[in-house]
Length: 171
Image (tube, rainbow, N blue to C red):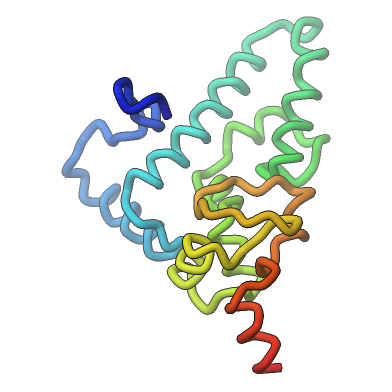
């Protein structure tokens, strides 16, 4: 984000407070391997997104019921459209219990792997970076793109992609 002169980090305060926490380091490594992340910065970005959601939910919970009512439903509908929650009718307390896996599961890289378009999460990252994956026919080259629920079914190989041709020949 930002221009070349004023670059800034895209994660708020996602860096761990204690750098040498063994349990946290092992958990981060496990998540990086499971989701095929390039570096910990990608994990910190996902935690930053989650932290913003949790902060908003906490601020809504701290309001009185009559103030919260008109704001709560649009907030939960937005979370549902992004795919972070399964149902709009869940209580707002459940939003506080979301894990970083909820955000990582919505990444394009993870969705490509889970839909079977790639053999591994790392293979999915390569396919996306080289332009072989498209959403609604438009190439997306960002593995960290958070795919909304309505576009999840429209993820496929890009038209004219050599990866799609290889799959068709194998069938």
